[in-house]
Length: 324
Image 1 (cartoon, rainbow, N blue to C red):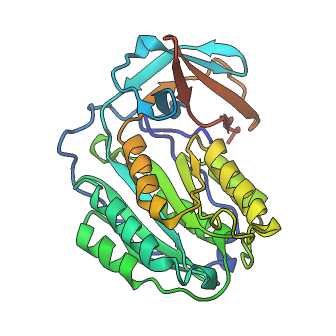
Image 2: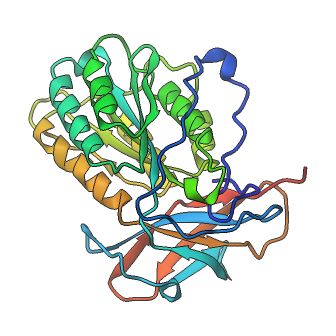
């Protein structure tokens, strides 16, 4: 994550590194509709460095807790307790990139994957925005950001399998597109997320994993990762998939999201449902760091909930601002 001069609760994503010439640029994002239940009217302020965290609180492995107040949270940066200066439990709109692996190995799995993705898209609300990206040897933005469920469904059903896997390129392009969706006013504030489905290791990206992970850590985007394992007992789990599993776990852990590794295609719709439930159950917690240094260093962040049996999850940290 990276601090930026922000509009109260949203910190702008970092400038993208100079790899544009190696990848196709995706279509520009479009503004969405106003939320049915508007978010709090937060005034725009220049010159404020606010650390913004999307926080998920659970009791046990699956029950989301949504009735907490600001006093229930404690935030620590590099071990130093911070003062929470912004708190919101309103279900803010979402800007989301839905990424589908369409490499050749997905051929027999794609119809089920499409059906599950369509079900997920149908759960988005009118105030949410989503784009559809498929990736094999190439990365193609099939549908730019829209709140039209029918357009999203049509794009998902266009996907067809073939070619190799360029996962890192796809995540990079999705991060770029979400950067364009930064709010211009308080009514456009959206939490940002990527949901990526893949069944194997990256084999053809121009970008290395470390570079894309660094970009993800500098963004305000949660990356939910779904890795389709081979069925148990099939004997087809490969070293390559173990590497892919590590990569997907890293994307999710570093950005405060979750990774899922279903063994059966029939579990896929349930996984998308869990992601949808989590996205609708998060808090936004913000603070201004007590550390005044503008050295670009990594700062580790921990969020705790002052109630027994509850667990808070958010991204692991952010990069401090630098002197301009």
